Length: 194
Image (cartoon, rainbow, N blue to C red; front, side, top):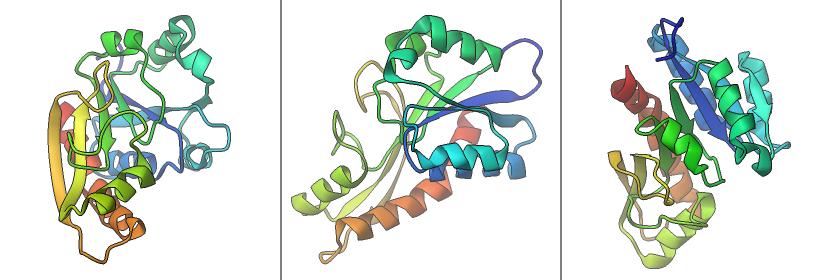
């Protein structure tokens, strides 16, 4: 933990709507007096997470891919906020190696399948759910894992599964996975780092 802070300070990196980010913020505020989300980094100027962060009173920084890949821009921002843990919540860029090295063992991602199935570059959101349906899987779920230098290959912390019915659409699967994300993601973060 950075000096001068009594709570674990989390940064969330997100590229989209931000429902997982908001869920984590609210969970920490309601249940964890020794943790807070104090920064959201977004690479998409039109992402819903920006408005959510503003409503929640969380500092949000919109950064280009080049900015995120520039250690002289990203690391000072992390240090300014005293960040202890980095959480990827629908963040669609590869995390730069310098950030992985700085926060080794303290960067966590959530993936919408049971890794190692349906992971890797280009496998996110609806693409994962469509692949699950196309493969005829009877179960899918979520994987919460450490981030490494390769997409979706870091050490697994937690998995939860749900049934895929024969007539499920990708949207049906997405809704089932979303329930698991809401229920488990903040709780696993708290159990892992607090």
